[in-house]
Length: 116
Image 1: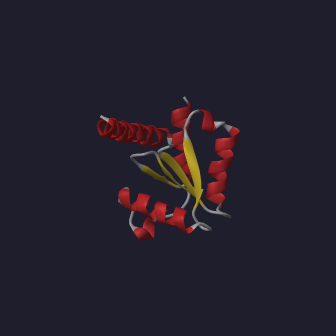
Image 2: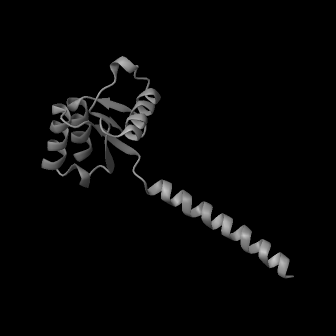
Image 3: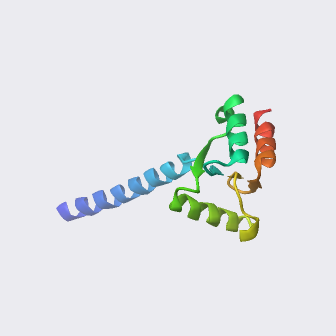
């Protein structure tokens, strides 16, 4: 009897961990703004986000790519997923979970549409 209780506990624990993992994945923002230090177009987007409190309307994270190799790799993988050729990639770039938006004007337009 004790052996079957242990097995049941292991199985239940396994499913609880799977459920918690799925919950954590769902709560992580799927939208990412890729920026670089010293980038004037990135600063335009940051200023627009701050001035218009865009974080109240759009849940996203900002990743700096020029000083962080892991963020740079994520940027390139995301751009590749969007079909952006290496010679056309640049920052700022915003990924909304489906599409990539390049440049400050496209990103600001995206945020304006979400604020309405």
